[in-house]
Length: 131
Image 1 (cartoon, helix red, strand yellow):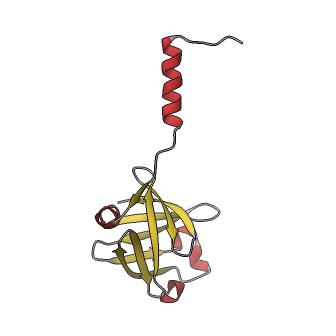
Image 2 (image 1 turned 180 degrees about the vertical axis):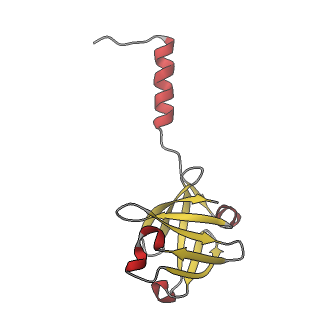
Image 3 (image 1 turned 90 degrees about the horizontal axis):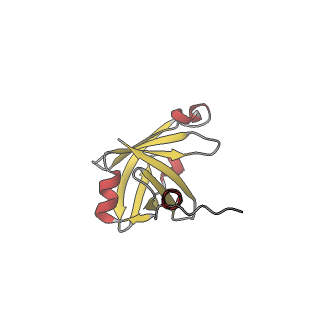
């Protein structure tokens, strides 16, 4: 087997390794979390493909709609509630979804506009954040 060791081949190999390395996740807390979420739309990845948009207004209101993923035929297609930050957790309470029970999540930033979240009961997922 012939091994290529020219500077060009080594540079290409280094570039491939650098781009293939996963980005280290950064736990968001307090002001970081508020700044990253407030005024943004969060698109939750849902099973079987698709996304569910949630809008986190800077005022503390959160709006959600299941119509984007076709849920309107099966359950109430939209709800609203409030959101807040408690230490290193993003919390939200919907008017009717989840029977109005509040839930809190840890949020790890995994890219420029991507996050991984874990709810306090262990349920987890990913999302992208947009304007």
